[in-house]
Image 1 (cartoon, rainbow over the protein chains, first blue to last red):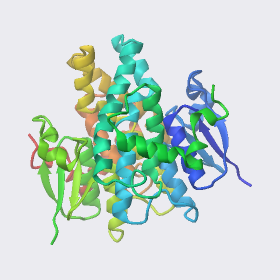
Image 2: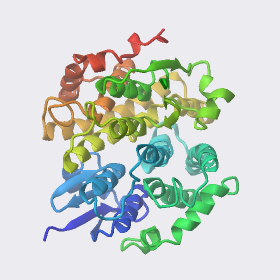
Image 3: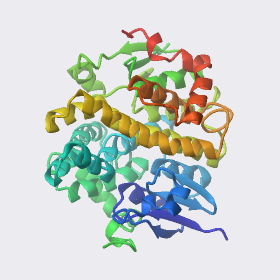
Image 4: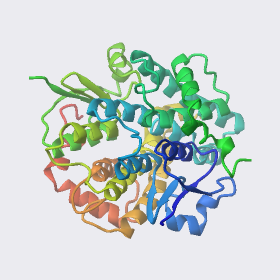
Length: 214
Length: 214
């Protein structure tokens, strides 16, 4: 039987998303850690798999897919008979995707370690400046996301079942806590993150529980 | 009959994507320009529509959707009988989405004007530094994307029909040219962009052809 292998890193938000998605859909997988601190994502071996030099990458029995949201959508398309990451109604799907993308396209790319490295190399930004940069973009995104969630309150981010929006939300809250962002202004975000953390699919995907956690 | 209105800005890559998608699907729409230079995206009126204060936003007969890729996917979901932005095979869909996201999540967010403004305000980065920052992230993304495209050459970015990947590619090439990125190292990207520019759905969405172009 063809194997399913996730190339990831315990603390990567994007890999965390895919672990949640695989768990929600009940799809077994093996982890193949790529140590970002050691630069393994830039090794010739890994670049041959993904020229972007980023995690995650899913090898689904030989089918190799990069980009966390493309992987999640693929899982929903390829395994439609397990739990769905997106609802069936087009408008509800759009809402879940718009929240997922507000995180994946507007917050997370700005906190990627490669951005901090470039800030340091080009503009001499130090550790405090890099951390404040990350906090700024998380707060900017969360300020608007909190309003979106408050306008249509539900158990989870985009309804009463977990969706792709939640797959992105919990890892972003984990990052916010890691960078000591004050979450007091975001009661809806915090409430939903707590509800998600109580679900085994989300809890089992937590960075601290992964084989490469340090 | 309910009206379809696109809130956008002629030079916004993300709005350009949605114009292409609407044209490809043959869906008529009215444009409602939001002048980003004048800060209209931060007006109380617009923030009430989209708390993120970003374009585009599609009002599809009262259904309001933000985030360009969520809008494109919505159009495919809600109007399945017109041209499809994604192929039907799950692996082919994943390939198109992974290219779209390599642009929408890994290149474009770093060149957003709000990022340049923050670099200037926090670290005193000048115009040259901001432009070089944008070029760096476009080159970084294009270096990898060129390899992806070279590995599976086709007429367009993800096959012989235009897909969501192309919807993102052409606007990113437009931005690269605007910021004078040398495109000589990217023959596949340039060839595909030229092929796309020959299609009316793409050509008609060009920033210079929009009502708010200056």
